[in-house]
Every structure is written in structure tokens, then in C-alpha cells.
Length: 304
Image (cartoon, rainbow, N blue to C red; front, side, top):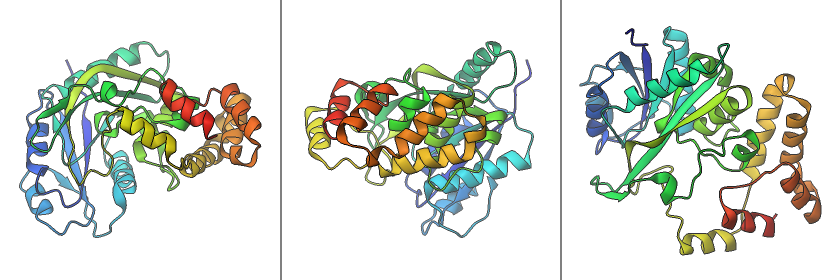
């Protein structure tokens, strides 16, 4: 069987404490046909020196872009520097299960069988939430944070992302269509998931493929969906301005390829703050602009 070439995109920043464990887990994969491309986002520690001791390709840069645009830059470089069919994203502080790539490719192949023509495709998985010493906090990030991956339609993704970038495998068609990633996107994985939902297909592996390390330096981490977390979110000043900006950027980019109902939904979503309370609630219900779970949606409707 021919193993398709995969580009693994790794963005690093002051990650000397954990980067070796991550790279070791990648190079210990059961699936071997890949190259690792690393872009360091301006580290001041020994991260880059550690990375250079491995068989990786370095995308040289002295500019600090932040995670979103660093990964976007990596994807653009990978797309134009090879004929790789698939792309994956790696965070510097996680540890991959040995069969992570293998399981992801199997899921992608299955998804491709159900498509009559090449489509933008995305596969992702659950994560095992661990502490900084890799002790298990919860064996399912989805359960821990009350995430339901089946809610991956565009209207649902506008409100809440269900796709974690470090678990994603995307095909070349999706990479092409997603780029350039807007600077108004909340995160690269969120933007790519929206593109896949609107124009292709998303599939998920209902098991963990990664140890998702939680520590003080996480840019985005896992939050337990506890009573305290719920109360904090309900009483906090919920600000969806970044969601609105992302939706507007998405509409401006892809409006020529969207159907009328999707255009209307996106326009209503990013202008919803201009409406009266009753109009906002009506729009949320009409277009099913819901978050994950009853409690989150009660809070959303109360504070719409």
C-alpha cells in the first residue's frame, strides 16, 4: 500500500521544557511517510537548538506572529513547497499517540470513499487531557468540556469551535481553499473548520489520539465544564465581537460561492448586535446559532 506523504506543521515559542517529548512522539509514529516543518515564533530559550537536533525542515523567521498566523504561514509554505496530499498541525507541548497519524489517515480514506469528487476534507479526534507531568486529568476532552463533535455545521461553528487544531488532518483541497487565513479569524483551526463545513466534509475519530498537556503557558487549554465554570460564564460579560468579525471576514471571502440562506445567516450573525433583544433571540433561533449544550444556550439567550 502506498503511504501518502504528510506535512506536519509545528509552531514553537519558548517551548524548551516540552518540545523534545513532542518531537520524540512524532518521530516514533507507526506511519512513517511525513516531513516535519518547524517555524519558531521568536523563542528566547533553547527551543530552536533542540528542534535543530532532529530531522526537521526549519522555516526561518525572526518575527513573532502569534500561533494563528505562525501556523497559517507554515501551511502556506508547505502547500507551495511540496506535493503533499495531507497536512497536520502539531503543538509544541503535547504528546502524540503512536498511531495518531495512522488512525487519522484511515479516517480520511474512509471519508474520501464517500465523496464522488475531490472535496475539502477534515478529520479530527478527541484528546486525553493531562497535566504538565502527563498525569491524566480526563481521558476525553470532549466529555471534560462538554463538546459534541457532531455539531459541526457552519451555523454551529460560528458560535463555538468543535475542532482542535492539534488533532486535525486536512487534505490539499481544504488547505488551498482556506488560504490565506484571515487575520480576523479567531484561530487557524476554527477558520479551517468553517471552510470544511461550508464547502466539504468533516469527520471525527471518537477516541483520543493525543495527550493534551495543560500547564501555565497554554495559549488555549481545556476547561472543565463544572458548576463553577458555568456560573462564571453566565455572570461574565459575554463578548462575541471576535465571532462577528470572523463571520464577516468569512462572508467577504467566500460570498460568491455560498447559497442565499448561508449568505443571509452570515450577514444576520455579524450584524446581530444592531438588532433589538427580541430580534436577536429570533435570529439565533431561526438560524440555530447555538452553542454546545442546554446550559450554554440558556446563558446565550439570556444575554443575547
